[in-house]
Image (cartoon, rainbow, N blue to C red; front, top):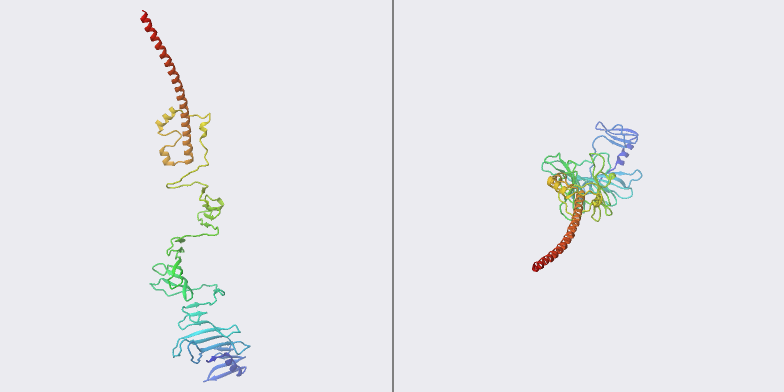
Length: 417
């Protein structure tokens, strides 16, 4: 191997004197001044200042050996280089036009040089790997203890050439064990390249199986989980689990209050359509019971084994002494005129305004209690009539006996005459 060492050239410059000028072929080529050497530069700025190109030619060696190398040596030592930039070949026999790599090596001052970055012959750049397969490949052999971090006040730009039939524009892929495990790519969502979304791919099996898309951010900002064409800001094709008693809330663009659904295993589900400060309007407890603090509207049928109304009084006022019980005659008149019972809405009113179940139950109970009073009154009248009938029957029996006796007396009188 042939190594270019800056110290040698610097020594040559120093041997020429404090300020010297050398002419080659009537041209000023090498200048030296104040321990600085300039090649094509009359006033060198650094220890070695070159204006023009520098060529390095080295010996040809076996596969992945250096052709030429530039070493950086510590001021206090001349034995071990602290860093190195070299050109390597990747063929066993070096030809006139060979495939070469530029290799960057560093050392911590105690160990030998080790490769940190490589620019391959195809333009791929590898950091932590000597065989980059992409334009930029980062590899960390101890990823669990040492993270890879990008810090920049600017953007990280990923670009690729676009073709009419391309679906993906490039992205970031994570590999493990030589297999692709996850990926984030920019994907075309329209017939032109102006509508681009982000697709997130994962792999659920260990093997050569294909990726499947787990999440999509569309070009208009909709997020889809389990779907490649989200229709809303969040479109989920599957179940959603919210753990640790956290809430599900919605923003309110029409005014104050954030609609919220709160849930936990102790108190069940609480619904806050106007925000938590106004209280829950519906609660579903862990035993399945449901409580409403406001009205409930149902467009359709309700099927239930039991309905309990607790906030409406009964119709026991009918049994009060001062209750004005309508006469059956007045009720008969109302029915003939209105075609429905007094104090009960007509069929048309029910169809138009609906029926309040609580009030309607009380009205029906009122009519049942009134009917009970009518029945009791009729029972009294029937008992009175029966009593009178029994008395009349006894009187009839007495009159019948008297009539029979009179008949016998008349017959005896006729016989005597």
